[in-house]
Length: 308
Image (cartoon, rainbow, N blue to C red):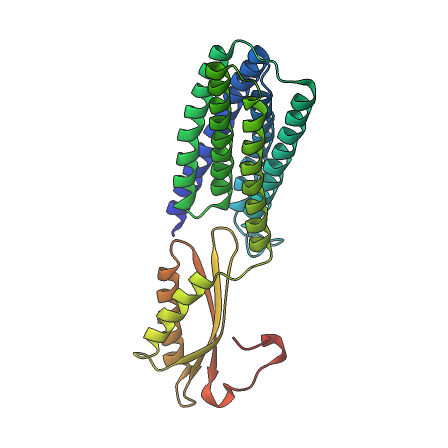
């Protein structure tokens, strides 16, 4: 991906995130209004989740700025991993929201649910849910294209908010049509359980990214490409390693050539291999190769680590 494409991608992502931030403010107002009118524990829980979401989005905007900041002397491999930090924080905030919902629901169960003006609450919650659904789908679509964990995490958070809101709508409708108020806390517990699992999943993915967890599917694609190339070009390979730092794929490997191969010929082959892997991992792949003669292939240097 060239500089112009990177700038375009960044501006697209930042625009969507700023829209998400603005929408979060509006939806929070709608949900608090609906909760105050109806006295619904499910709606209060939904509003609490939206407060957490608003804070998380504000932090995610800053993380997106950092993740696309170019490498500098202090951070020579860039700032990509800020995206994983943001995703992990957002997962923690989602989990916190679930715990808040459990607390509010428990309080409602002890005091006994008492609701009023359910029709207005249904209308406000329905509008908020529709807006959130559209926003969440947009975030996931844009986040998937440039491989941005910030947008994906935010999109999953928005959709978890949608699930909560749907549960709230169902609860309010059941209370309205059956007259049984206990549907309200029951649905609140179900919604909280769902978003708790979403939060835990985001935390796990974030930790995996920060710890450079292996991506078996990506490595398998790289190995398939290399195995095909080595049938056409005079090289073997080992010490293949891959990590994903946010929106950049980093790959390193050793290319082995006959002892008689000139440095120029080996360099040309290595360049071709690097171009092929980079194209496979487009739009943002960084490839590092180490050239060595076949006579030294079985010699592992201390700095190389275990053979892969």
